[in-house]
Image 1 (cartoon, one colour):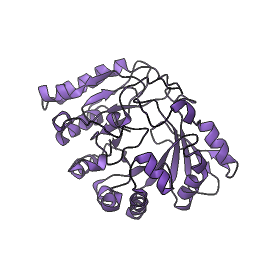
Image 2 (cartoon, rainbow, N blue to C red):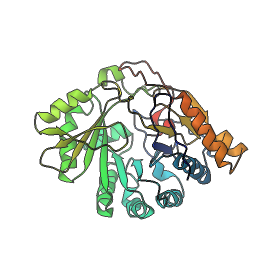
Image 3 (cartoon, rainbow, N blue to C red):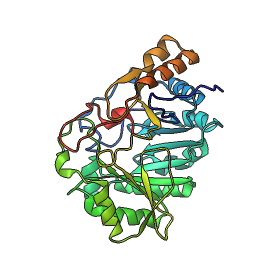
Image 4 (tube, rainbow, N blue to C red):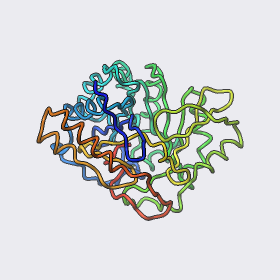
Length: 331
């Protein structure tokens, strides 16, 4: 163990890593990527050994929560081996995965056995045709089966993630919440982030604020503030009389940068210090130029943290402030 920590210029201690294992996905969600995506050549993607080396360096610098992301992380071959190694690290308080749910019917028990404690599952609609329009894939039944498999596998918490868009699925907010409540799940409602240039819709016209979503919920269900924090940007409320926590991720309307405790590493090995900025540190070059030099890697991470910005400045209009798509960044 090392006493060194990751602290940015604003005194925020980094304890949470979102580690992308692939930019590939078996869906093509309209707010995440284009239909005809060009994915990175495989040799540009970090190997499983390199991904573990990155995670190990972060753990040595005080990171206690790791979330595995993509693309769709469960399409990465041999991922279970990496998860097993991370799940065995006693320093980690939490190992989680964000997934679209398409592979969970088969993999949920193996993920739980590997040490994954929590799952976030994307679900933007309970209507088959609408789900297919969002994801460009007609696989709602597979996702629903995956959710049931995850419940049966006994994860500590399962949370649904729903990106809410005005005129596209905002009329399903209560249905999605009540789907979660009936199954003892949590759910987060997310304001769309302006990442990547899209043609499927105009973000200005579909923007739906977290406040509007919460008001719609409170017309039917009582909410009280929750003390729960998972290390991410959600602000949680408890649905009175249920086990369900409702989270709101509000990059536009309620900036969550003040207590940011996280960084991202992309599947290509770029350290992204802030979701709302394009600058990044190339860890892949360092890993491949100096394989096995864990001290050099830790020093690079500590140095990079001095460039972490104080906040992002997302706008709810058509301006694309960050050119990379979400699948390239990691969810």
